[in-house]
Length: 143
Ligand SMILES: [Zn+2]
Image (cartoon, rainbow, N blue to C red):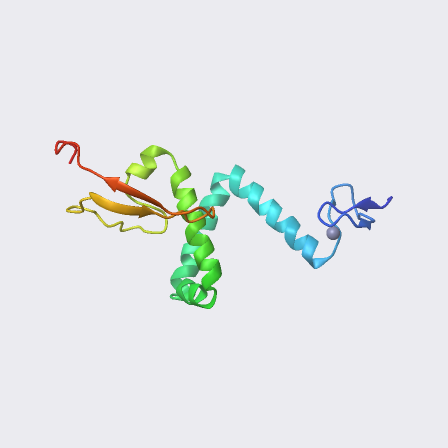
């Protein structure tokens, strides 16, 4: 067969068959596998359910792993926290109203919290200045 460019690194390689689209370098094989799994997770609900079950089983067998991981990698933990905030906002409204966010299963019920007063809105992602806002109660019937 004639050499073809690798789908991942664009290096020319000679494929062993017509289906091979990545070279044999470990990095490209890892990328190919990740791509395969990403597509499988999007398109196959049985595979998705099996992965979820498997990950839960592993997490139960390795308690404290993710807590230790977050302690070892504070920057990654902060990045994930910010990205999770965005993912939560993109979720359909019905799911948001279910009051259960992904990372916080036992979301606190804010009974008694009065969002009235002066607050600073601080952007988490874009580098913008904080904005001071005043929140007033218009009517008591919304509570
Ligand atoms: Zn490659």
